[in-house]
Image (tube, rainbow, N blue to C red):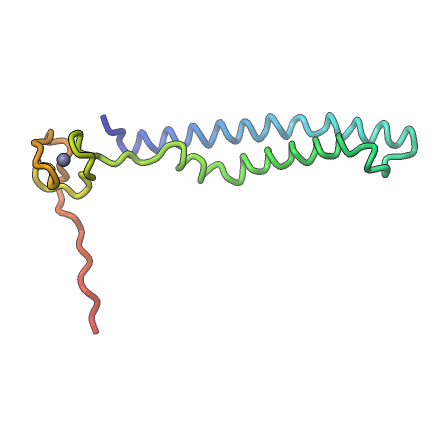
Length: 129
Ligand SMILES: [Zn+2]
């Protein structure tokens, strides 16, 4: 069964929500290495010793990257994770987009009526010169 456009939009919306939740999850962990670095660094007077604190600073950077990427790429990732299903012939795998008769135009297989579109394919008029 091919999901309806409404179902696809709901699934994509769910994926976006999950990615935003993931972003929030990682963002909430950022204060842990940050407070550790600054707290220990200020009490010892060496918070600018970036080599010593490189592990914690790297952890902060990784958490920021994951969190930011989950927000920035939520929409494109949802389109990649939930693609629009394209109807295909079960016998020859030929695309059935813009099908106007209940037969595969490639192999002639009789197809169920729900795969046939009501409208003929839109054809662009040739450009005027
Ligand atoms: Zn076919």
